[in-house]
Every structure is written in structure tokens, then in C-alpha cells.
Length: 238
Image: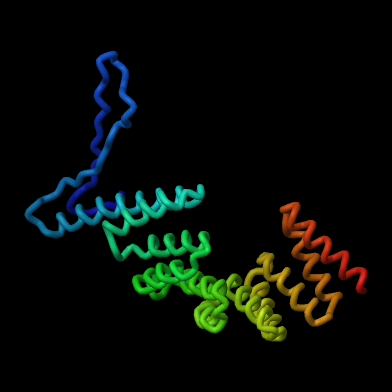
């Protein structure tokens, strides 16, 4: 736990009471954390309150992540909201709720929570990326580009390139996708999208080259089969 010069955090615990038969009931032993401090010093009280709330809030947020990973969005949302009830400035939870709605394909709600997160953490690059993805799903490419272009990561360059590809701006798409692989030569999605760009440009040898790089980097059988079929089609054209 965090060290504080004028007080220390202690873990207090007790066993659950035993039943008449001498066996423990189903309830878990409980524990909580207390701080030895001078109650007349405001700094000690503030530290105590902030630490306890921080642990509880983080626990609720993490429970939300666990439920969300298992597809139990109802319990995930309940725990996220409990986390926010202790601290409305906890930007991670707003972001996690946004991701939950994104997976549910409720992109308007996702945007609302991503935007709340950004208000509390205006310099967090991942939030610009998430907002850009939500606008892309809503086919609002101008707004998507507005947010994605504020960050310089392989994933953002890849998404920008993919948007330009959908808009038919193939040279701009090629440029951004090459920036993605320049930043991270192991960023596989950009190679596939470069294959799409060159296929659209009828530059089939280059398309085959980048599809092959992508094919060699993936392990999912269904996806490999899909890319293999593309490669076979290009070889017939060449």
C-alpha cells in the first residue's frame, strides 16, 4: 500500500463465526483497511478517505472489467456505476462503459461515455482513438478523422488509412498505412489494408506481397483461409 509519512495503512480481518456444528458458514472472512492517524489533522483524514475510496472504487471497476470480458454486460455496468458513485472523476470507468456500449454496437452511447472520459482526462491518447472508432462505425468519417489525426500511433494511422481507403483516396490511404508499419513493423492489420489498397490500384504484385506478409503473421484458421483465397485469386490474375 501507499506509504504516508504520518500514518500507516493496516489490514484488519477476522474469521467468519463458526456454526453450531463447528463448520464455517459459506460467508467469506471479511477484511478492511484502517489508517492509524491523528483525527484532528485534516491531512490525515483526507488521506484516509481518499485511500479507502480509491481501493473500493478500483475494485468495482475491476469487477466491471471481469463481467464485461465474460459478456455479462448488465453486471459489468452495475459495477461501473458503483465505481462512479464514489468518484465521478474516474475517467477509466467512463472509458470502460464506452467500450461496453461499443461492443453492444450502441455507438451513440459509447461516444457519450468516451466524451465524459475525455473531459476528465483531456490528454489521454486512447480516448481520441476510441472516439474516432465510434465515429467511424457511425460512418461519420470527418469526425473520425478529426480525433484520430490528433494521435500518432500505428493503430491510429491504420484506422486513418482504412477510412481513406473507404473514401476512395488511395494515395492518402497508402501513405498512412506505410506510416503505421514504419512505426511498428509487426503491426499486422496495416499489411492487410495495404494489400487492399494495392488491389484497388490494380497493383497486384504489391497486393500479393502485403497479403502474404499478413498471412504469415496470423494463426486463426478461418482468417488464414480467407487470405489464402485472396492470394490464389491474385496469382490467377498475375
